[in-house]
Length: 126
Image (cartoon, rainbow, N blue to C red; front, top):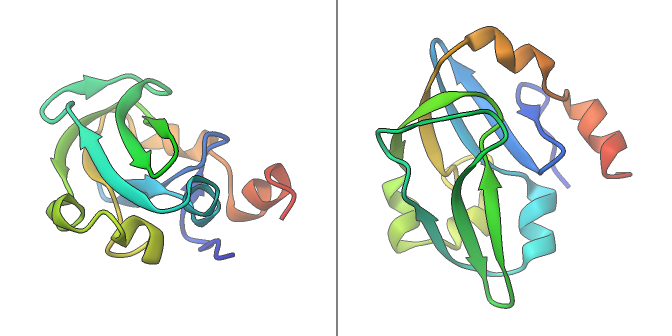
């Protein structure tokens, strides 16, 4: 499994990559493997501020639907249009083309409280 060191992680298996006062969020390689083939991603929070640890959308796999939790308080700016037509990108490239949302951070320093790659690996016993 892949755990890019430049990302921060949550116990709910989301990752975040900070880019100034914005960030990109997706699900981890571990999460996509656990879910199996992803067939649909539903995000209905664009242009809304979502509080840390609240649901910002869902991901549907062949056998289950799972909530997506935002790691920090942020306003959802956009959904990755590439996954709208090709949700399998979340499986094949979860840290690249398979990102899910772009957000504007309410407080960029909140990211510091999230898990490092090593902490996340320990959390999932990888």
